Image 1 (cartoon, rainbow, N blue to C red):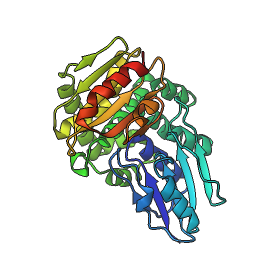
Image 2: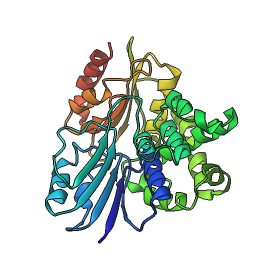
Image 3: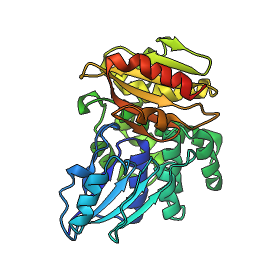
Length: 318
């Protein structure tokens, strides 16, 4: 029997898997990639009797591959907080899915484990820009403000590292990053002693400093649109910039666009933190869109569709 761990390469996917494997260590084949690479189940070569754990990737996007795995006699355990669509009903599927705006996959795993690896769930929540939720979640840990700030910085660095259109845009591939994280039960030791993390953090700060010099391409009463240049740094920083702007102006929605190799744009959308809903519905109106209610995106927005996207963005959050 083989086991496959399938996970989003961002902070939430990494920390969700890390919590599980700290509690239930096992040898597994890792399947992951850049944050936008979420059609992951079609890459799982599992056969009857094998097991698959899926974390932080949309069941709606992966439904056909999920049905095929179950039909082959594969057992699937599924944790996620994205729009799921109609889940297949099958005795081989165990799913814990909650798309509520104050939930991330790391929190779902925390519930599953009864809080046994809570500190990593806090990192996951910070990485998904759920700052208030993360701080509330950390209350039983009795951490001081400086320690919470360290966990926030860790979550944001892990989240940043997953952004990019290809593996070549990333500072470190998520599979490599997970294997490094796996040797650290304590996130504070990871922060203090891991050179890979320092590389990621330095790149994040440099990229954000460049992005902050870019003004909005469009500004409405309820939304802002930023269009970044065609460069690896801009593709890496889309999510970080979206979260930064969302925290800076919590009453507004934000869209961050960068050119992609198909001649269009890759888009990250943040609903207003004051009303964290509607981002997924907006993005699903476009062919390659999806995500969660507070934060979503479009993999390939054709250049000619930009005016329609801007119109819908302004309407969605009016």
